[in-house]
Image (tube, rainbow, N blue to C red; front, side):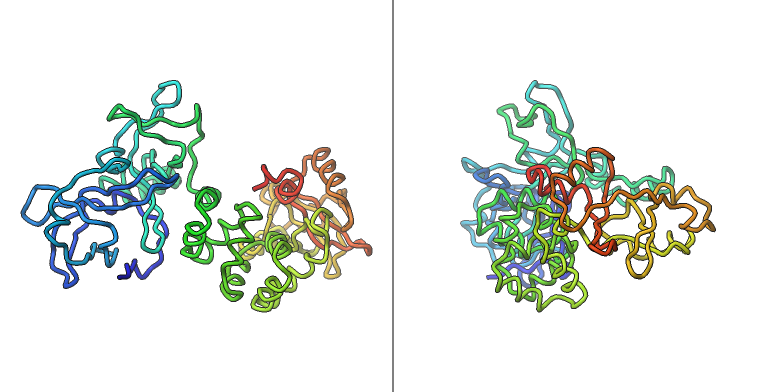
Length: 422
């Protein structure tokens, strides 16, 4: 048996999208509707193991195993259910009903103070499996449940010029209590976060090696690259080693050149070379240039994807160029002013660029007092410059005084303090 998901890859689902979903047999005949999902609490991110449903024309709850699902699309298509599977809807020890036990429950901190109410539940779909990963405590979650999500998004965009975001708490920070109406945070305070690749990286890191690989390989290319950049370097290596060179190259091409070089530098030489051969020529060349430098010196810390334009460019031309190239750049805090040979004349901050006359030339706007480092500069000296000047990025120069790359603060942090950089 194989479960077929939607033709359009969708990594995440919400419980509100599944409740009330029509259940049909292999021929498409309706059997009932989803009432609740059952999870087991044995893992940090619980797996859905069963479905509670009400058959057509009945009000009694019945239960069937999640493994019976053939297709999760507009409807829930399931294998034929025998009488024994439909006989009852009980919850076993170590199991939890998502809707019944979690929705609308209050979350309290370790001191008993009310924090938020659970408005929806966020689920990660991995091949045949579905895992509970976040509780949704935001207004958007509530609007989704009542069917007003799209209307509310349009209203906030039109009236406030604001995009209403999701507010999630990772499930690993939440624990059910004996009280039927309360959940408790496992830490005294926790800043609610929007879904971020770092959250997905946390999920991947906490799973065992087999489930970790399964989750990672289920992600689309862009999501996999974003999550990989936030994952511990040792786990990065293990995940990439499970992929064939073509698939690995597709993911690594979506990473920044500096992150890609760091990862390839940690891989066995033959594996790295195989991936480089599969990568697009321009990207592969950029990464190879970074690989020749030790990781703890400026050349190994820099990225070659930075904004640079000639001094004759106008502010308007610079802004238009940035809009077109932003997604291909690793940083846009500063615009470096240089010629085609890489001679650096000055730097313009993005703030100054936005405030300047559109017709002003970069030569008239730039600050020529640029603090730089050489390719061989050690990480300790670079850290001192960041601390002294408070820059977000520092350019790296070669022996001919040409700009070869830029070190951003996050890139330095990943080497100086790995526990903070990722």
